[in-house]
Image (cartoon, rainbow, N blue to C red; front, top):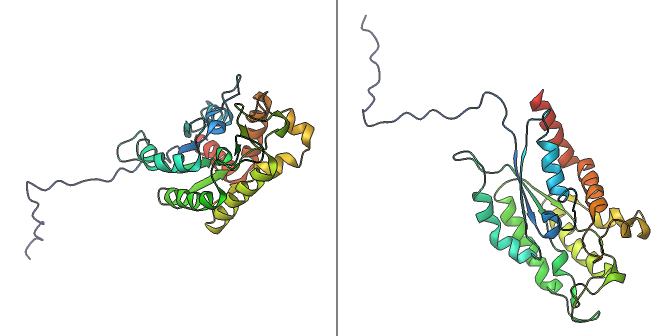
Length: 244
């Protein structure tokens, strides 16, 4: 009986063996948005994203990687413009892209410019399609979470002597984001409602002197809220499981 003939392999053919890690790899997570992502105002912890990064790189964890891509003053349109380039520039390993995107932006679109009854920085009718475009682009890259804006202290306005933030406008812009996320089944953490539900004094104690950015205690509280949120709690559980 004739022995089976081995298939011919051209000397010019390269056989590529897929990379299969021996154990699950840490998640690569991008946090992109404005100054609250950046952590402005947190002198002790560097902001909630930095605090989360440190938490996930502790010795007893697998070491999820967090990239802080917050830019002070960014609005939705600006984050949308830089989103894909930022995403594709991270990953650390060859042919590896980030696994998750955390978005947090929108506050800087909401203030009234010049006076308390002036026009909004970004008109709501312009803001809504901008948010929809941002979310659609983000979902085209990887799974997305959205951490909503925190309330300001209106009595401290104007910010920079010309920007008037207020709760009524914040609510409208927050709701536009929430509805767009809901329509796309993107998890949304409503920090605005969560913080206001704890009372005005509680909120004021967690905002800096400018009335806009959280202080150290505010970022500590924001991280606590994020940690209790199901999407992040699941990632934290995975981080611990992979290390065991």
